[in-house]
Image (cartoon, rainbow, N blue to C red; front, side, top):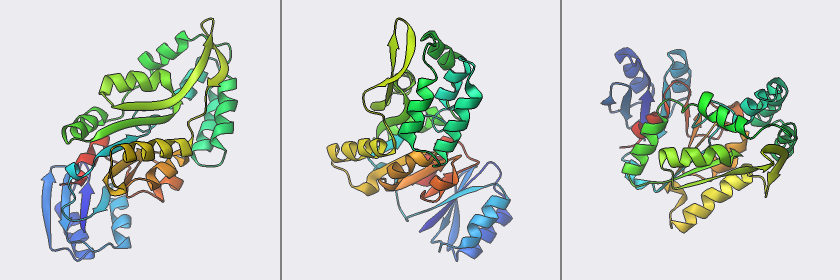
Length: 276
């Protein structure tokens, strides 16, 4: 087992302390913001120290290579991108505070996702469809490292899937922009140029996200260990549990508890540094 340490400022004394705590056999530099501590034995003190000095870390099996994986599945809102799209759409309708409070509770796992999404979408009834374009063009930004991450994964031969409890208006644009192989999410119903407050078809919730992961994995004839999944909230728990390696990005505590790696400081492309 190797301990991968990630961060903008990784000091030598910290690396030596981590190596001592884990009984490691050596330290390798991956690049300026990533180091590999070899043959590390997991120790609870690693988490405490890394939190103190604002570093991310993960234990990764020795000689685990990126090309050993075949599938990458990621959430969209607050993971691949910097916003919760539904909150910003609601802001165009003067309802951001009300809707954002429900979104936050749902991401913490305190509300049923399907019911909470239907409730939030219903509040959008009557909003002009053009508001969606404003959100995409004026407010939606990729989180740091997103483009480099997807490019690096595709270079390594991984099949990439974007799956979201958000909306097709945004996932389809991001699919085209970043060259994802697939994208799945919820479709907002529009009539006469305005949102009706309803969703077309079944809602993509936590179980649906995991189902898309499993379906794709089976289609590609992969083992669970060959799947990486990334998310930020309770709605991503089944998806991460179905993956061989789960990453929690700026995540809620309920998701952090099931993740193999928590990225609290590092950009998304730090995932590329975890594997040889």
